[in-house]
Length: 207
Image (cartoon, rainbow, N blue to C red; front, side, top):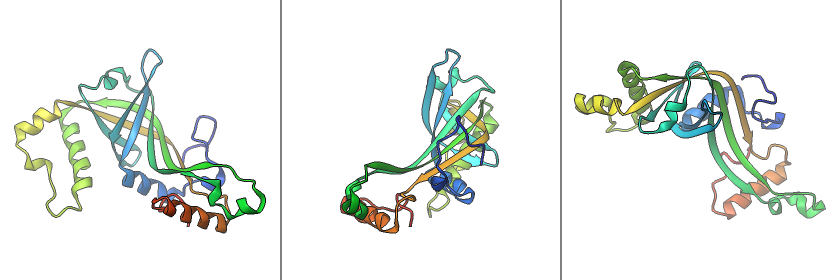
């Protein structure tokens, strides 16, 4: 985990995601919002599929997306990985009936990856990247698709239509806001309330 401070995600100690949970969470989500600031000081954001290996996150943008033209190599970037989220009603807490001291909140999980960004446009890097990305999402399929399934000239054409993104991760902040600060009875009430709304509580309430 990176340093926790004013520049990081606000994470109360009871909402801190365990270190060994973070990479699995990011891999399961598989996407992140890339946020960078252009030379004019204005922010840009694009939602992208990502691969996180070691201290490096790989992604790619469509060349037609002007975001990449505003990225300056070596400047700071933020990747926001968002999990499931949902409104939590105070009426679900048994404790609310006892003393009334309860307010609505929102449960969610998120990982922020901060570091420096670099553009990658060489064909070999792009081919390796899209191969890693597609293999990760196809590996469980019996009829899995591989980059080599498509004609070579077709792949080359599509590689020319994208620009690679590489973020060197320097700080990781991870938060799982899942009613950990509530009593066991209140958490059971949240589970029942979510199910009553037709929502699967998995990943929204700490067991």
